Amino acid sequence: MNFTTLFLVLSTVITATISSPAPACRPSKTTFTSSTTLGPAEAFVALSPSDTYELTDNGLELHLQRPEGTVTTSKGVNDKLGDGATVNSTFSFLYGKVTYEVEAPRVAGVITAIILACEGDSHDEIDIEILGGDPTHWQSNSYSPASSDTQPLWGVFSGVHSIGNSSTISSTHAYSVKWTADSITWGIDGNDVRTLKKADTIVNGSTHFPFKNPLLLSMGIWDASNPLGTSEWGKGPINWKEAPSKIAAVIKSVEVECS
Image 1 (cartoon, rainbow, N blue to C red):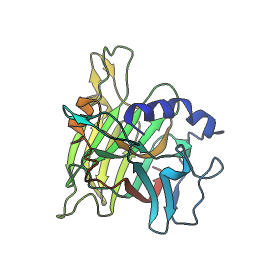
Image 2 (cartoon, rainbow, N blue to C red; image 1 turned 90 degrees about the vertical axis):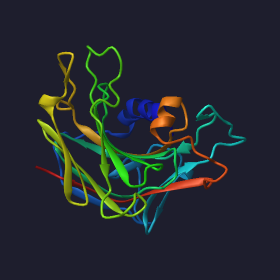
Image 3 (cartoon, one colour; image 1 turned 135 degrees about the vertical axis):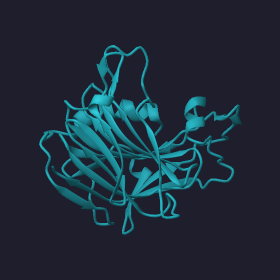
Image 4 (cartoon, rainbow, N blue to C red; image 1 turned 30 degrees about the horizontal axis):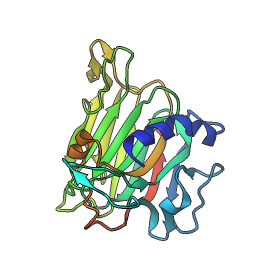
């Protein structure tokens, strides 16, 4: 599932999959194993077909599948995009801390995304994005559009951070987001690395900070091979002549803590 499609899914499908969203934070931890169940009545539900993910004793595998037919690369982009998995929580909350244990694939052009996203029309997001073409770093971002925006502020509040400890994204790391009414703090392996304050998100007189709407958890893997700007950011396009036909990110656990 590509980035644009993910936004459409989040805005049109979530309402159908969450029957009673709870804005209050409720502490929980889900450790994914082969016996874990996904569905509307469970903590998490898959929004993509069953062949795009697999529950194993090693965790929840999110797959990006090679496009069918011949993939042509020209001028820095691929003419076809692979289909990736998306799994969302069936609950939402207003403020708290989320920690994801993740192993991400080291394939240039592949993005592993672990996101807090608004289920309504505001499109608020708090992102952790792991680029397969940059195996020693990960990225943080916040996106909260305002009516005064003349264009999307996709990367204005983003940051790039080291994995640390001579490790790479393919090892298991605990990525965290602590979200309050006034700030967002991102961390890795128990160490805070960046704080974005609400007061620092004012652009053209408008605040761009998610502080009004409850957010849900979204985990996905997607192909950043097109358009050109996305491909350049994602270190793509994917070289499907060398990449495996099925690329996997692994989510081992998700924990929600309340302030």
